[in-house]
Amino acid sequence: MNNFMTLVSEARNCTLCEKHLPLGPRPVFQIHPDAKILIAGQAPGTKVHASGIPFDDASGNRLREWLGIDKATFYNPEQFAIVPMGFCYPGKGKSGDLPPRPECAETWRKPLLEQLEQLQLIIVVGKYAMDYHLGKTKKNLTEQVLDWQDYWPEKLLLPHPSPRNNIWLKKNPWFETDRVPAIQQRVKQILDA
Image (cartoon, rainbow, N blue to C red; front, side):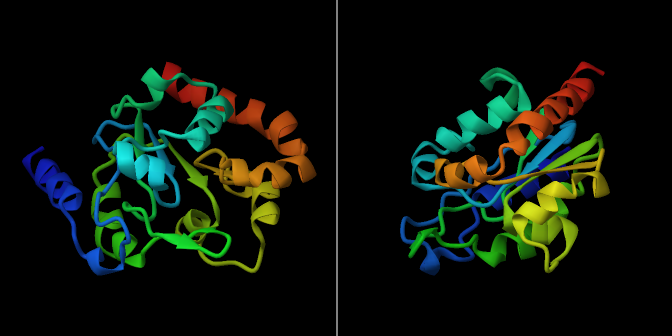
């Protein structure tokens, strides 16, 4: 456990990409060696950067709805590890936030994820996380989410729950009507075991 605590402390105090971060470094993640479910997201937005709490925004509200869980369950690190591709807010781009800084994945993901000895499910949120956890592919996000059975039951693929994805959700109503109930059932199965 000492090695785990040292690793977490080092990751929380990381300043590797400080010069690239408009709001400075503030690594935001949640992890415990007993976590059963990993949420592999993108990177924190400005609200999460300010609060220091993962998915403490509208995206988090929608994500918890999709998973069928409350905040207390979501923020229990012995149930859920929340380890995004980038731990700090990357800055604003032309059409939303910039991609996660690559330094986090290169430096922290493998050693942190190796600590998750009870892991049963990885919830992969968004294209950057999909590329990392599934390998780069020519499939777009919609095609990957449609091919969910290729990864079931060890991985669940989700579009980003951001309100910016409302157009995608309207174009793909099958996701909330068909996929969300299956996602909720899988999450419940793991948490109830």
